[in-house]
Length: 369
Image (cartoon, rainbow, N blue to C red; front, side):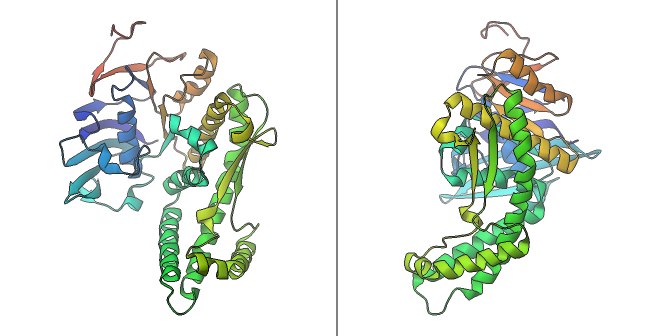
């Protein structure tokens, strides 16, 4: 199973430099709010996926006063040691990023899946109450790690849609046929991947919601823009929608149907979760979805992903914390906390303070390590 063995950080967020050896099982990053605990999980997520989960403006992750940040991870994977590195640099006001595997420049698509991760964070609440774009990212982040073909199809699809939109906005002569065929072929593949993934996630999420003490039945359902039971039926629906919406699309200069408009429905006892649930129910539901994501990824790859819990279990009682952290028997877990979590087995504690990390011997008082 892939394991994160060491993490080197330079000029990232509030870290000038850090060199952290990591173990199997549970590692708790403990410290006051603002100390830099979440920054460490962001660094792991960045080097594993090539993207930050906290900002779309990744230049914000570069330490103030510096022009570049670097995160490097040593991982153990399939009996071999590998190093993955990402560098973020700003030159002439423009951000560039470069990924390397064992020192060789590598495109992002070839890095995805080398160190699989599942993240649960406070921002997950936006998956419930926010726009459909956030819920699509939930699908895409997992599927990109599971399937290189999905990642490349999604990348090409968005590029085709952007070109199609630009053509319509220019009012150029001729139709959109040059892009329609590509968009449909790619979109049908994307929808098929999402459909199968959500078919597996939904029952696991329902089960985890119950295990975490959620009241009622949680349902998670994929709502595709181009529905269908087979690729052929999805393609037929896609072409019908493109024909029906063509005049409106040309008038508005944007593509009105396709996977870029898909959504995921979250409901509790048949009612929309964001309209009827409490914030506590939202948190429990999203943690259940993340744990379901972890289960599906482990089943698909035969390898348990690294579980990143960014202040994700603080509001659970001790018994439910133990249920979640029992996954450490199968996975490496990194979590942030202002106090020691409730766990039956051993836990390694790293004290985080003002961008510095040190091994800690836990005391019930945060001030005494």
